[in-house]
Amino acid sequence: MTTKSFPYSAFLRGPSEVLPTLDNADVILERRDDENLILMRAERFQAGMTSLRIAARALAIVARRNSALAEEVLAEELPWLTWLPETERQECVRELLSHLMAGADTGELLPFGRSLTSWRSTAVIWSDPHLAGELQGPFAGDGAEVARPKDDS
Image 1 (cartoon, rainbow, N blue to C red):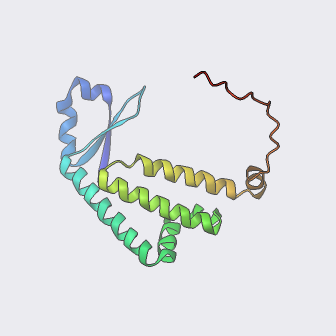
Image 2 (cartoon, rainbow, N blue to C red):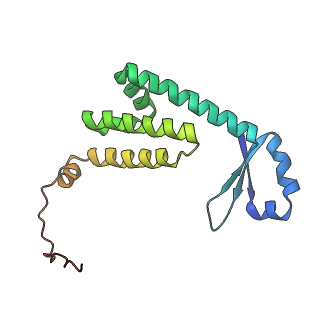
Image 3 (cartoon, rainbow, N blue to C red):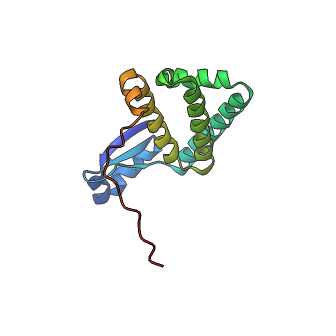
């Protein structure tokens, strides 16, 4: 599906100029001081969510029956998986699939997006052996000693 962008102010001034675009495209309303908004017909939204739910469940079935194949499929789309150690790669695949399944079922995809960003950042750190080594410790613990809180009860 194609998209067409309009300034948010154009939509506020004359929605009748923007809304006919929804017949052939989704609309991105560009806002200066906040996130952009997307307008789409409910039928297209529902079709997208249904498609996502089916694809997520199909991938989850593949993962249960053949975890190596699921990892291979995800690595095709997420090439940075190769930087993760084997055990973390398997954990990453499981976590991403879990978030994807939950998001496809509920329509709440932000946890999946956050997890994807987090795992990508982790993979980038693992790609630098020096940085990965530093972040694994041991840590000096040079901070100031903090007194135990007093019990006020």
